[in-house]
Image (cartoon, rainbow over all chains, first blue to last red):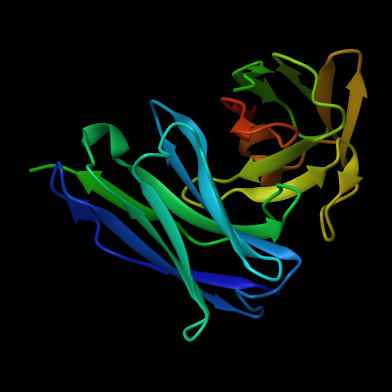
Length: 121
Length: 107
């Protein structure tokens, strides 16, 4: 049973970067049959998949077109975790952010509890 | 991106009722469709994937199907624990996208 524990600040100022971490237990970030995702949810945008990282002999990343110029998702094998960085945030980025895992096909069978991130000065 | 349209947005039903939620993609997605259940204040939970395959541990009253260009989630015998919002998700084409959700209320 994979468990995902999220952490990170709940308040970010406009134009700054949002950073969140997701610690994995019960699996390895280097598992070559899993993918590690970030998804957000807001009243205005609903559920929105942001991107993922996964290992298949080397590391790969896929990002949503909506945030591709601002997003970075990095694995950390030494801590068995992965992180999200979203730069140049605006109030439109205010949302509950979830980390989620699943097979590389694109479903999400384990989720973190979510972190509400508010972008405000 | 593929748009996923769910209907209805809200439904109210009694315990024991058969409930049906529909999801229509803006283009063909094969059978690459999943359903999630989200209870208030919680993360979504995977119910069904590949249109009709029940995730392990999900009660058998939940089922998924496809008819023409529409996908359906059916709850056969609604239970009080089913109070939640249900989302469809396509994973056929980048960028993976979700429907806007269907809130199920218990009468």
